[in-house]
Image 1 (cartoon, rainbow over the protein chains, first blue to last red):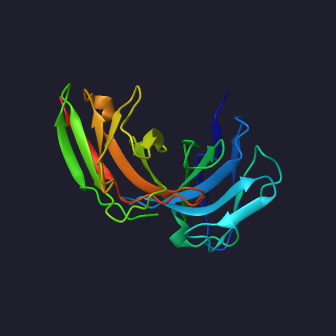
Image 2 (image 1 turned 120 degrees about the vertical axis):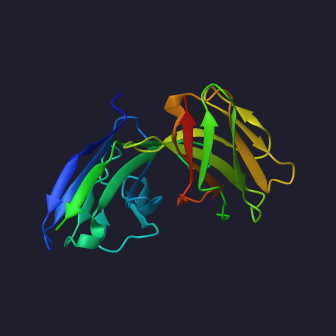
Image 3 (image 1 turned 120 degrees about the horizontal axis):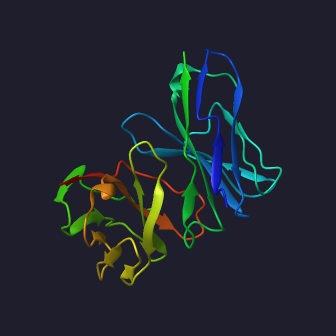
Length: 114
Length: 110
């Protein structure tokens, strides 16, 4: 299994540009999520999904959209990039509910918005 | 989810045990205690979790106080590879929104 994969590893955007961060998992996990981590800070939840076709907002959803058309993929779309969105983005997946099952994290995408 | 309190940083010597404390005084009966760690420049990785009883796995042990208001992550023999930020999370059953705090930065000295 490749686990959780994220692309790209690095990205530089100009203010106002849009882009999609890709996340995929090959473990048939129902739960997937996106976090952002600012320098020296803990992780903050952006959006999550408990299954294909179901998404919900986390702690910091503004400026981001998600969709879950398949079990494997959970892309994160930045609608109009702002410097405040400069961060490292982590995707994670879990077999089912977070209480009983561990989350597996991807290697992250480092995004810089100028 | 109940709020957790951890020390900002701790130091340990290589090959010695490490006890990482976590307070969660407002924890409810159905909140699980999870520990994750994040090595430098990597995504977090799961360490251990439990509800009431102490738990052991190949990475660590989790000791939960009888009143569940605190817990301790135990690394039995620290190695340099254990240097990381350790996150203690009190997570409600059936809550799909897991929140990470600032964690404890563990430094392991050779």
